[in-house]
Length: 329
Image 1 (cartoon, rainbow, N blue to C red):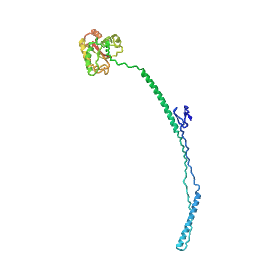
Image 2: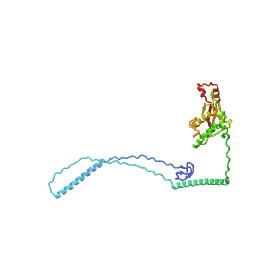
Image 3: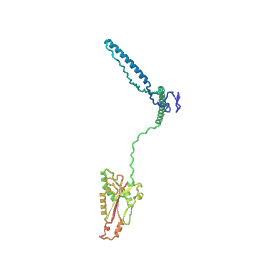
Image 4: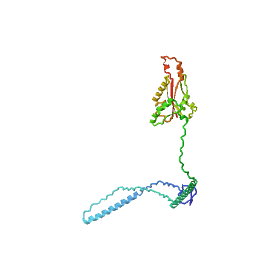
């Protein structure tokens, strides 16, 4: 038996893996083999072989010649002829191919003990199962305790109809100007055709516009900062108010000026001062509409002190009535 060098767990001698710390015990080592060397044998026996070959050839030639001579004499006798001996000195060279010897070394890897490996795997699986069983037991106990502590659910009660909260005061149209009401009567039916919610009148918004009038210069009046008067008229401080359009009339008669400016507002309801503003098919985020129609007293005072001369173009072009259109959300 041996111990794991990392966690000290007792392992088999053939174990290659520790299931306690999940580390490898015997790491594989690669054996580097030397490069085989080629061995060459030189042919050093060339000369003796050549000599033996020459002697063997001479003996064989003499034996063959004598044998043929005896057969010819027995068949037919003839006059002996002179015999000439021919000697050939031709060197014979024999070259042996080089001999190469290759040495190969084979190292067998020691196979691990399968029985020891199977034993380690079984122990690891048993340990994992025991831990899982302990967690399951704890969870089941907690679930049982929680279920026991739950209170019975009460029976569903019938829904009680709640009264709709009263609308804030600034939603009221009381105190709204006549031009505001007339413009809403024209705009809202057109908005309904486009599926938009109708705009509403607010007496507090129109009052805020009236309180915001101030003398712009020595020549006319205008609407200043409307946010300074929100609390005075009862509007929320987080209200968002902005101007939609404005125009004026040089007519001195109230009814004529009213008709002129209202006609102009209807014709220009789709065109605001800001790009894309449209009272008929736009401004979905806004809820209230207010129109401030007033007589400019500063212009009237200047006109009263001016000589009415037919050749005086300024006298006839002085705007006595103005109207401002605002939206609020």
